[in-house]
Length: 106
Image 1 (cartoon, helix red, strand yellow):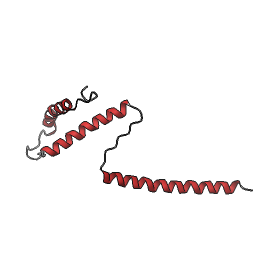
Image 2: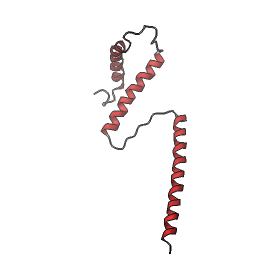
Image 3: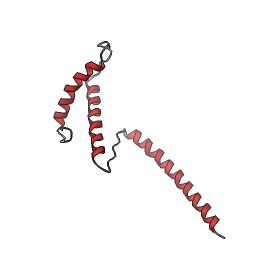
Image 4: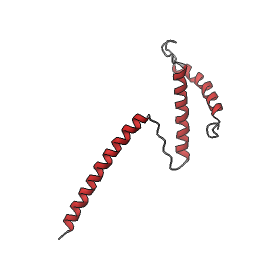
């Protein structure tokens, strides 16, 4: 497929053609002005969907791949939370080790 062969211009062209088909299904019964997006917003949405599909393909076909797409602010917040949890877990493990070693001493 174009996606697996990384033919990005062709992927973009086909996505846009198909989007025209499914847009008409999703907007059925809606007023034409109620779902107007800027071209920039639509481009961002299209790119996000294409990359999601590509990343899913990579994750499904290759071992050891983890894909995460978040802003740097979100990533910083997640990393800080993980660090806090890791430190709490480390403290708990050390406390448990001390407790076990005290019980084993005569």
